[in-house]
Amino acid sequence: MKEILNDLYAHKTLSRKEAEDVLTNIAAGKYNPSQIASFISVYLMRSITVDELAGFRDALLKHCVAIDLSAFNTIDMCGTGGDGKDTFNISTLASFVVAGAGGKVTKHGNVGVSSSCGSSNVLEALGYKFSTDADKLKRELEKTNFCYFHAPLFNPAMKNVAPVRRELGVKTFFNMLGPMVNPSFPRNQLVGVYSLELARIYAYIYQQTDKNFCIVHSLDGYDEISLTSPFKVITRQEERVYTPGDLLMPCVKPADLCGGKTIEESKQFFLSVLEGKGTEAQNNVVIVNAAFGLHCLKPHQPLEKCMEEAKESLFSGKALQVLKKLIEMQSI
Image (cartoon, rainbow, N blue to C red; front, side, top):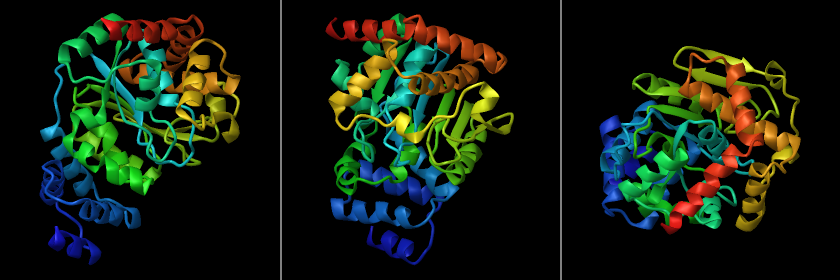
């Protein structure tokens, strides 16, 4: 590691193979926490390259606990995190709305690092039990249209680096990697990123896969469609900037999207939206993100139709029923 660190401090970059080897060694526990922290810190001071990110992804996917759900046409919906906005759990709520509308969601997530409450925090607080049991996950997907992968259980390198990430408390390249390493290899992905630069890197890497993807970034820095500003959407077919008005939605104020200060508070925000007690801003943001998820799953269906399906799923209580059924299954 000393040689690698010296190269990085000299402003050199890693090849794709070198990047893969480093993360493989992290997964194997070959580096101490100080070395890992030092390595991570390099990427807080300079941009990651396409080869480096692709190599890190290759290592995690090669060593992940893979779950075969290829019999289903699934989608993962998540953001990179690390945008510093501390919003409520938008992508997780949007995932339940997509599931309520009939989409098969295999969500990959983690505890909060740069925010107070990640998707793992809120789902655990609601009673969901993390597992690597393929039969359990498959049953959940069949019965509810939703199952969840807690990243540290499926990615050994992420597990080994978790204490360092927590102590650093800032976004790292692991934020960039999270959405790329879903252990069920979903065919569809809606991913929110915190910068246009990262959106371009993601687009370049995803273009080289057979994945159907939709990358979103709000131009004021959110890693999701926040409706606080225009936002960019990149798919295999096109790049486009939308405004909230294009979707017949009013603009939202950043204060309207703030999450809870504690996990319990975040849980209550989460339930209030699913129970139909969310504010107009909260509802609209969840619906728009869900609509683009449905559009990713069904690219030939007009976005307007996807918006209608998302609204119906949320306001009819179908999304809430997904959660209720999912939690009921935890005691089986």
